[in-house]
Length: 215
Image 1 (tube, helix red, strand yellow):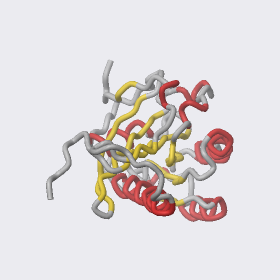
Image 2 (cartoon, one colour; image 1 turned 135 degrees about the vertical axis):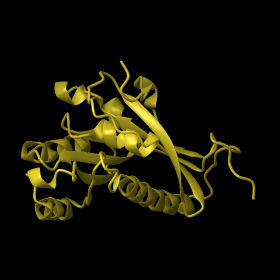
Image 3 (spheres, helix red, strand yellow; image 1 turned 60 degrees about the vertical axis):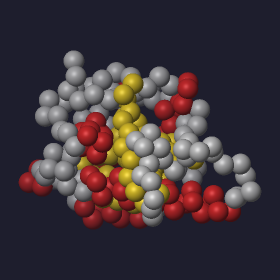
């Protein structure tokens, strides 16, 4: 069986990163897509995205991960950022309880602007700083269960559970989407090599490809 070229995929999923500034969203993005971590964190104004393909059940899933890149400071994230997103990682910092307190506000914004079927994962980042922990794992786990979210703790610095977090959410999205595809097989399919694009109407936003530690 021939291998797919880099630009070929079966599914393209848009996943957004949300949460307070400074919780490590950009480093989760760079760790997953390029296996890089930037110690000198900075906010970039605008929308960044990076892509990476993974295999799920023999299918090539191309993930397009969008990062708010500083907009959360101005609370000016628009519906265009959420449009077409099929997954969201809602990130807080386990050492800063206020970032966890704000999770409810982010969840409300997500539910106001994103598709009602979006798959949401709560991510407690910076798990390497256990000695500074401000948010008990059990509290976040209980909140996730109450809200119907999946939950994981990660460390972008040590590369702990970052791969697992993205693999889990992309697999969950794939299972939902592939079931829907089976149910509507009579609908037109994409042309050869195009795959099924589950990203819609992103033209109104002007994303730039993410670069690490630039500028």
